[in-house]
Amino acid sequence: MTTLPNSDANSSWRRIAKRALLILGIALAAGAGGTWYWWQSQQGKLPEGLVSGNGRIESDQVDIAAKLAGRIREVLVQEGDLVTPGQVLARIDTTELQAQRAKYVADVASEEASTLEAKATVAQRQAELILKKANLRRALKLIETGAISQEDRDSAQGNHDSARAVLEAAQRTVTAHERSVVAAQALVDQIDAQIADTVLLAPVRGRVLYRLANPGEVLAAGGKVLTIVNLSEIYMEIYLPSEQVMRIPIGSQARIQFDGADFAVPAKVSFVSPEAQFTPKQVETRSERDKLMFRVKLRIPPSLIERHVEQVKTGARGVGYVRLDPNPPHWPDSLQKRIQGDPVDAGD
Image 1: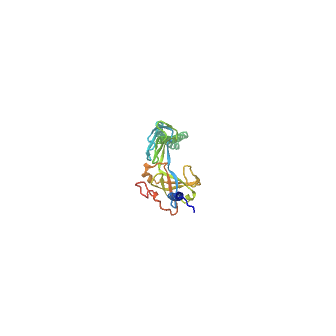
Image 2: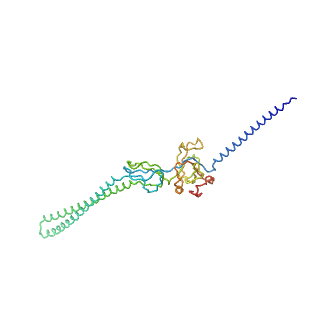
Image 3: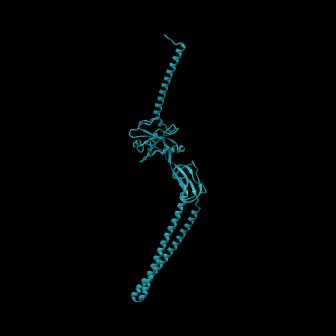
C-alpha cells in the first residue's frame, strides 16, 4: 500500500478548500447581485393604477410688441423681473402722434365754427321764408279783390318757394358740417387710441424672459420689445403610450416630482392630445419601442403658483405621475411629501 507524504496530503486539502471557498463566494455574490437587482426594480416600480413620464416645466409665453412703428422711449423692466397685470413695461415716443392730434383737434374746432355759421345762416333763411310766406298770403288775398295782377301773385309765390329751397339747402349744410365735426373728432379719437397703444402694459402676471429692444431703437409695426413667461399657466408635458392614455380622464389627479427634490407638486391633467406623435428626442422612455406616444399636459394649480411664485422656474426637469381610472390607488409616501408649509391636499 502506497501512502502520500504529509506535505502532499496537506497541499491537496488546501486546493480542495480553496476551490470550495471560491464556489461559495461566487454563489454568495450571485445571490447578493440578484437581491440588489430585485430591490432596485421594486424601487422604480409604481403601484397598479399609476403611470409616469419624464418632462420639464413649461409655460405659455407672451410677446409684448409695438402695435405701430415708432422709436422706443423707455423700457422699465429687466430680464427676470416679476410683473403684474396692467403694469407699464415700456413706452414708445409719441411726438409725431401728438402733432397729428393737435392738427385734428384744430380741424374739429374749425368744423364746429363752420357748423355755428351754417346754423346762423339757417336762422336767417328761416326769417326770410317767414317774410316771403307773409307776402304770399297778402298776395293771395289781394288777387281775389283785383288789387294786384296775376303776375304779382306769381312773383310772390316764386319768392316763397325760392326762400323755402334756400332754407332746406342751408339746413343740409348744417347737417354736413355736423357730420364733418363727428369725422374730425373720430380722427382725434383714433390718434388718442394710437397714443394709448404706445404705452405697453403687462397683460398677465409673469416674469420677463427676454428683453429684446432698448430705448432709442426704432421698431416696425409688431416689433417685439419683451417676452414674458405667463405664471398663471405652468405645466409639465409628458408622453405616454396609447394603452395608458386611453384610461386617463381630463381632470385626473397628478403629481410632479423634480429631479433632485424630495417633495411632489400636485397637478391635474388639463389636456390629452387626440393624435399620436413620435416621441421627442429630449423625452426619455422606458422602452425604445415607444415611438408613437400621446402628449399629456399636467397643469399646476394657480393657487400653488401664486404661493411659490418666486421659486417657479420653467425648464426644470422631472417626472410626472398620473392616476388612471377607475379605482386609482393612494399615492405612495414619496409622492405625498410637500414643500415645507404646504398642506398635503394643496391643489387637489
